[in-house]
Image (cartoon, rainbow, N blue to C red; front, side, top):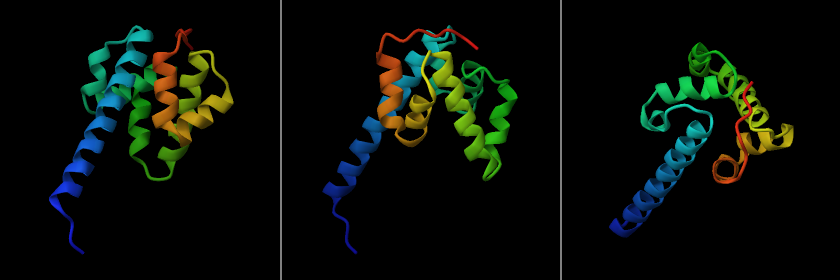
Length: 116
């Protein structure tokens, strides 16, 4: 199987765009929650801040490292995130299954962080 340089560059550019979108949306979500926006670009610390924004203790980020437990914890965190922004369970399901759609909606909408 041969892969051309053009295909590799296309994959690289698409990956960079997705990465920048993730950083931008997390930055804005953290700022809405009165957390430092730059936390979105710091590995591990961004998970800690996401736990806090979701209304859970920061140490829950360590539970994300346990296989199968991480799926449950991720959903609980996303449900807390949706709830703290005044959204319901349907939006939490959207955050879990279609994060590239629902995180930008949360970041760029007029939703305000109401807290846990």
